[in-house]
Image (cartoon, rainbow, N blue to C red; front, side, top):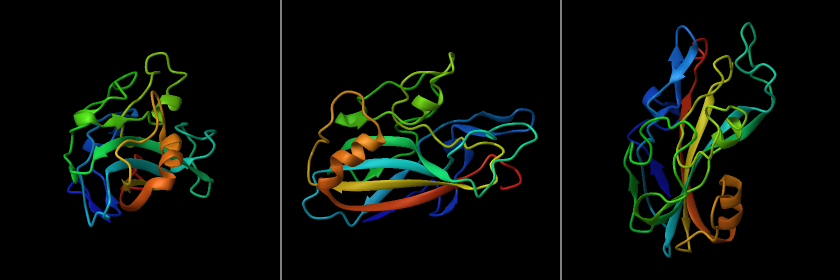
Length: 208
């Protein structure tokens, strides 16, 4: 499968309009437009009955000791972990394109509604759900797309992998609230093919 985006080139920088956070001279970071980027795909395997779209940041610090701390930096050699930014399932086989800003076009404190999404699709929760769990003003279930907001003092450029999976089933066998790990486990026996396009983002002026 081939996956690409009109919103950013593969392995190139994403614009701040597709991010949760943007650089700010006074406070390091401010809320951004949080639009989901455009995605489209081709060369779909025969027998495809639905698609799943997942976005993962593969460069999230595995330890938060230095994250967003004045006078400190997150070292580039710190072990990294995955962070789910978007989990979209039950995309009909007739669909081959997702327009920009169609699933997200602003930051929603406490998270967007879910799991129901456009045209019978469903959203899973992304990892901002856990990130904001201790913040009284922001905690909630973050369904759908919420874009990049890496630590403003991270010395590593973050990579956002948008992967489209073609499945031999019309509906992912999960109900209620689910996350990215749940989806990947559920679809493993049903994947006919996949493709990925990757964008990059940083809030650190030294890295940008």
